[in-house]
Structure formats: structure tokens, C-alpha cells
Image 1 (cartoon, one colour):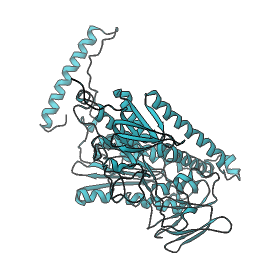
Image 2 (spheres, helix red, strand yellow):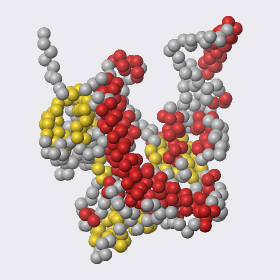
Image 3 (cartoon, helix red, strand yellow):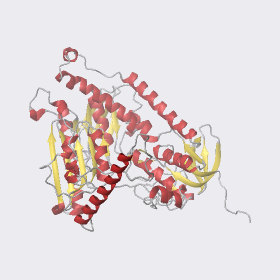
Image 4 (cartoon, helix red, strand yellow):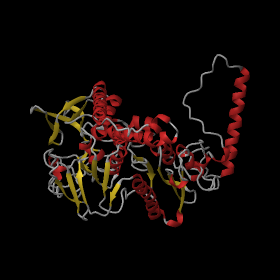
Length: 564
């Protein structure tokens, strides 16, 4: 009897060579031995590597270093800095060249990683012929068609450009920021989201006269109000020119001196600008991707309508479920093109778990995932903003926690303090740079459902606490961790009247009241070393008996609902 199932060129074809698509492709090729292809029409690495997280963090570091030299070093009595009249201006062209070379190296690392995994890389633009066939058009105009059993759309996002703004051609997007050959003397940044806040902070920190144009009252309105309010005050204190409640930009005009003049809908006028950077957000990168009859005009060309893949009518994101399934059984989508938690690490996690689910059999599920169907969790995702100062946040804001659980079930802990780095600043305590931490707890056990911080190194502090929160940590769990002194992070485990929260734990083995740390589960018996002795073996056996008796006592004393 012959096999009538169709044959394809690839088991898995990924359209989009960003972090999510590449991670999924490599997982399928390396872990499951599948034949995989990746199509990318720009540079490998996607937004994050080329015009996002990586070059932005590099520019943030440059800005932060300049501020450290101008302010912190003087306060720490570095005589050369104190006596210097140098403004420590960044050599922008040299630094841009160095940064661009580093990004090019990352592009090659991505390429070599795919090749090493046995993935075929196509340099070209992919569009659907049918739901199993993709046409690839290369830069030289040539094309070819390939088929695949499974297809992933991971084309990411792109900056939104508001064509209603008169003179939009005189502006740049966040992508264009990384193409600037010279540092602007005066810049306008339009946008209240994290991109606008970050780039405004970078420019201001490097010495550019920076104007931040907000459509409403303040930036980062979706963040916890205490965090957005703290940042707002700090930016104003630092000297960023904030234009509030403008309603947005009405027009951008080119002046006779070659500079730009910005007029907002609210009547604000900012002239003699070198750069006007529009940062209102990003939209799905599906240009040339016609979806269906309800799609908005800006999408035609990738021919998704030939596949019946559904798209949100309002924002054009591809509709997926919690497993990254689209409306077509063998076509999947993830990352910014779906519009859910638009973060690189989230796309990476989703991509890897997607490949586990598509190509892992029941045996793999049982062995690796204990029978659970693999998927990425979109809950309690930590994120940071590289503002000045940095922000770290995970979980619910205070208004969201109240809406979900009720104000009567919420306890909030706050701490505002001066990081020790600023202790040597010769100024009034009220004027020293501050750090702010906030813990939001819910329920009788005071489970931590939100953690928000702003201040020096908040971006580095958050990651460890996110692990604890994913495991259901309570305020008592936080308190049970001995503080690392002197650090900013110790504030997170010493808030409130220490040790007085309900003694409940979210851990499998509670760490409360001096309990012994949990031991790992073992599947193999420890091989005795050559130095072992009969006495040592006997002591080991006695220890196991004592431990068993102790556990039995604890379980019995804590009742049938004990987590032990």
C-alpha cells in the first residue's frame, strides 16, 4: 500500500528572521531533527537586534555614562573631572560606526547559528501562493516557490506613521533614530509610550535640548500611576521640556534655515529643531500582506487572503489563541505581529514552545513536560523601561489589582529611598535622586500580584523577583529572604513591619520561620566515593530515617491540605 500523504520541501517554514522566528526554527531543527527554512527580507535578528532593544540599550549606556561623568564623578571627588570644563560630549559618528559594527556581528551570529542548526536561510520576501506554498522574491528580482507542512508567520512590527500629520515627510521614526549620522542639538520626540520616553531620555542625557510632546497629561499612562508619576517628576526635574495635553502634532514645517518647526493641535510651537522623532507606537509588519475583505488599506501583498488567516479588523494583528494557532490549522503566528506582550523574550519563549508542541510526540510531552501540552505563559511577564531612571515592572498595577480583587482584598507596600550611590552627593536630602519600590499583595496570604520599581539599576534587580512571583510568592516569602546589604534590592524584602505578614507561602517547601532549604529530586542513586566508610553509610541511613520521621510529623501536624 502506497503512502498518499503529500510531500513538502520543508517540515517547517518560518517567515521572519527575528528572535521569535529564529528561536522556533532552531528548536525544530536541533531538538526534533526537522527540515526547516527561514525567510528574511532584511537583516536577521529583527527589530530587537537591529533597531530596538540592543542598539537602544547601547545608546542608553552611553547617555548614562555621560551623566555619571558630569554628575556622580564630581560628587565622588575625582579631581580631574571636577577641574575639567569638558562637557564630555559623545563622538556620535565614531560611536555610531562602532555600534553598527557590533550589530552587524550579531547579524552574522544569527546567520551562523541557523546554518549550524541545519536551517536553510532565504534572503528575500515571502508571500503566500496557497496555505502550503510560499513564493520568495529576492533582491535581484528572481523568485522561487517552496512548500511546507507547517508555516510560522513571525514578521514582527514596524513604527506607526500618522499620515494625517501635515509634513510627516520631515520627521523620522524610531528606526530612523539609529540612522542619524550626527547628534542633534535640538530634538522633538512625539509619543507617550516607552519608545518615546527612552529615546527622549537618551538624547537629553547626551546633551541634546529635548522636547517630549504628549497627547495627554503624562507618559506611560498604562503603567502603575505611582511609577508614571515618579518618572514624570524626574524628567521635569532633569530638564526635559514636556509639552502636555497637546492632542498630538498638527504639522511639521521645514524652515528656511533647514531646521523644522513643530505645531501641535493644542497650539504649542517648537521651532529650530534638528530632528522630529515620531514614536506613537508600532503596528504589525505585514505590509504587502493582504489578509481578507475586512483588512485595512495598509496591508496588501503577502497574500494571506489566500490562506484564510484571520486578522483583527481594528489593529490588523493576526488572530491567534494561547497556543499560537491561527484560523488555519497548520499556520501559526507569534511575536509583535500578534500584538500580545510585544517583548523579544516573550516571542522567543512562544517560538520554542510552539516547536515543542508541533514536533514533540506524546513521549516527549510525558518525559519533558509531565504530560502538559507545551505553551508559553503570557502571565506575570517582567518588563523594563530604559528611561532615566530605569523602570522595572511585573504583574498588576494597583488600579488593575483593585478592579480584579476588590480594594478590601489588597495591601500595598511602598518605599522611597536614596540609593547609596547618591549618599555622597552634597545637596539637601530632598534633592538627592530617589528610588521607589511598590509591592501589591492580594488575598489572606498576601500573594504578591504586582511589583513595580523605578530608580538606579531597577532593570537589573527585577529578574530574580519575577522568578519568585511566577512561583506564587507571598509577602512572607519576600520577607523570609535575608536582605543583601547595602543594595537597593534589599528594600523589596524589608518593606512594611518586617516579618508581620501572614505566615503563608507560595512555595512547594515553605521557607518560613527558618525552615530547611528544599533539596532537589533525584532520579539516580548517588555513587559512593572511594573515601566513603561504613560509618558514613550508617549515618546517611540514620539521616534518611530521621528526615522521614520529621516529614511525617510535619505533614500530620499541618493537616491534609499541607503543601509539604
